[in-house]
Length: 198
Image 1 (cartoon, rainbow, N blue to C red):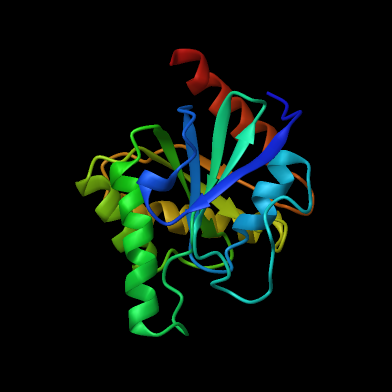
Image 2 (tube, rainbow, N blue to C red; image 1 turned 90 degrees about the vertical axis):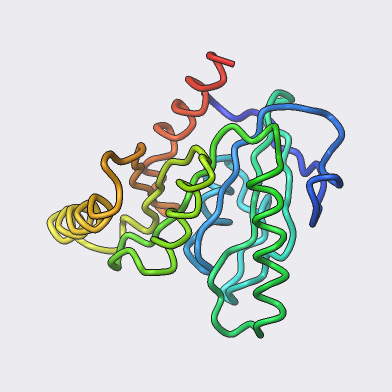
């Protein structure tokens, strides 16, 4: 699939405020500063679509982008931003939880993980909550250009081992880079394949 058109369709903090037009939604989430906005811009071929920032925790609302006039790409706030106060963290968690649990149009949640580090406890807890609530998800490993192929392969294998301690089988895993574009076609083709079955 090629994205020929990506249009900002609105922001919300509750599912009831989503765009009124009902279309399939593919949502993206990850820890703050995992490279989510950069990946979204790479997928859409538009560097200014999702606001990127070196300051974590910038996305505080759910942003909908209408793709090819046929589905929504949904940009969710990051989770686990330590420098935010507890009240702020609780509010963000409520926004995220409300969307993930109550958006009937969400087809799949892409969870972004930084490929340079072991999957953290906060990520594992988040994935466990998805499993408990029956939320379909896939994993996207970001920043895969930041280390050599051997180091990357070893890290991905280590992450796989960590995940298999909790999960009997793993969801699809995509290796991406916003710099060199790797993973872009695989993710878009995967979304396209799902859309064909709806």
